[in-house]
Length: 275
Image (cartoon, rainbow, N blue to C red; front, side, top):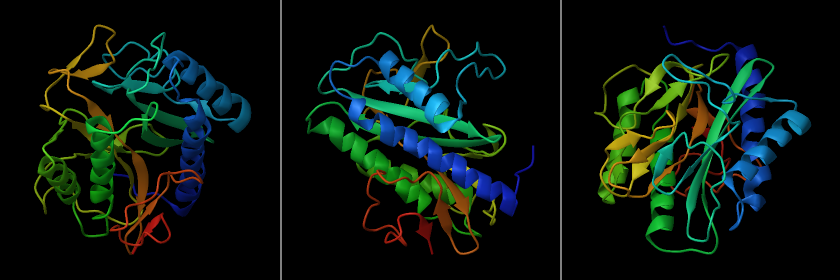
């Protein structure tokens, strides 16, 4: 499948879908507290998406080849869960970290984003992992411009993680997105600069590094979806969807309560555009 260059109409619709996805994370933030179950977070997000936004939760019943239908409306990955954690009866406790991954469909277009949450008032290695992973995502975003390559993105994410003693998961990657949940290109979070496809204005894709505190190896649980670290070390992930513009990039999954952009990011004064 070729990489799709989005039309102005596509881009306008993607801006709406992506903003709505980010607003789900804004909505759920005050509910991520000790004592809540991941199933309750899923229920709250589902009701907000369907009842308030008029969006469709893209993960619900999503079934790529070889998978059983995903049974929930969000992914909630706790501590050593890397991605695709299925919400359920697990009770969050102070000191946990959890990634909430949101994808909504609005007027046929997908908006995809995720954030890390630190449960309770907690400092130390777990919070530091979340912070460095956030920086890894922005390191990847900030090299985006026409003529740069997908390898540049991966190299930026990988070198920042490894500089801090962490490892990058290699089996999962970012992806093109639009009318389909997953499109070309695949956006690796490791690699060599100057390699792979060149970026062009009109491309829309996610950057979503998964960073492990220990080794990079992973395994799949018996539910067929949840991915965990093999060594049981903590894992973190952040995700934005972005557009390649003629002069740089525009981050589409930004909302009023999005975390602050690092000071070193190009064009950080606007929080959404790189120049």
